[in-house]
Amino acid sequence: MNRSFSSVSRSCVLTLGLSFSLLSGIAFAARAPMEPLPTPSGIDIPVGLKNISNGTQNQSQPANSAPASGPIWESANSDPLNYVSIPDKQAGVLIQRSGQQWRLIRNGVITVYGAWLLALGFFGIAALYTLKGSVKLSEPLSGLMIKRFSALERLAHWVMAFSFIALAFTGLLILYGKYFAMPLMGGIAFGNFLFVCKNIHNFSGPLFTLSIIVFFILFVRRNIPEKGDLQWLLAFGGIFGGKHIPAGFFNMGEKVWFWFGMVFLGVIISASGFVLDMIVPFMNIEYWRGTMQLANIVHSSMALLMTTMAMGHIYIGTIGMQGSIDGMKTGYVDASWAKEHHEIWYNKINK
Ligand code: HEM
Image 1 (cartoon, rainbow, N blue to C red):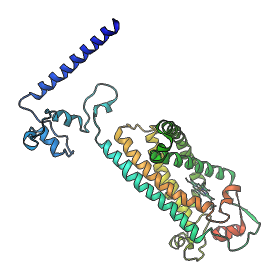
Image 2: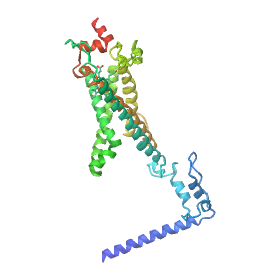
Image 3: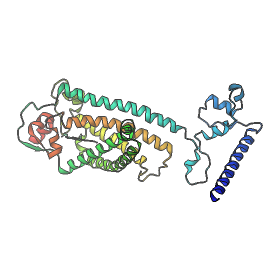
Image 4: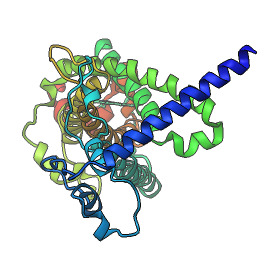
């Protein structure tokens, strides 16, 4: 009895609601003469929509019997902010059309060109290793060890390296995971997995930024360009010509990685990441959808570039060059390595 009453009342409400919408639709359509809404400035409205809104739809689309809902649609489908009385002012934008453009850039331009960039970096390194192999020392190891990095310097480097690797790994899954991991895992497992990845990403981010700041303070003096750096850069460190170019504590390749890779890209990626996390300190930023979309484009494109560069750095720091990892692992390098790769620095400490 109760159930049948509630189903009757539900259908009454439904019927009333439908009739009200129908009536108001008819009343709206019957307005005469129909006033076109002002076109939002700077926005290119498609001809079809213009025809609907200025009442010439009958001539341009005689077979289209859709009610004259053009003005409503045009008003809803426009970026300008309408008035809302609730605290969330973003609710005043009913349909944010630039969101579609952002989606196309993120899921088109960035993912496609980013994948090409990563592939180019990876296969370039693979080709270099295949063709040239690991760079070996021309003299045998001397057994004499020279101090290169302190414990704090190594700690700062490894915190930066591992937080970056965690960020790169989880970031790539956020960007590309749906293309390869989701079909393998299924939607629910992938969703949960990505939730974990996103949290790892969000918490490693500030750690990475902090390590950049510490690393910068510790190493900035040794990365100031000096005499001989340009020569090193022009000869690309003698890697192809085979000519030996002496370098100081850091060679120009390392300095480019420090200034462009770590400082420039690191700061841009950190700043845009803080915007995405909505935790920018000391600044009163309004986190609008447009702000987030812009931050997302900057963040992901710069992160893909830095990941590609980091692959090159990691290659040289591990299998690409004999003895290069020792300094960051133990703090000490062999004197033969120091003489061969950082001769100016070696001569200085020999004095
Ligand atoms: C497993 C990953 C990594 C390995 C094996 C590695 C290895 C090394 C090694 C061996 C050095 C010392 C080179 C020398 O003695 O001259 C070094 C320096 C450095 N690394 Fe890494 N690294 C890794 C990841 C990273 C990452 C992810 C970053 C940045 C986000 C980074 C930034 C730097 C910088 C800036 C320097 C000093 C170069 C300079 O200041 O000019 N490293 N790394």
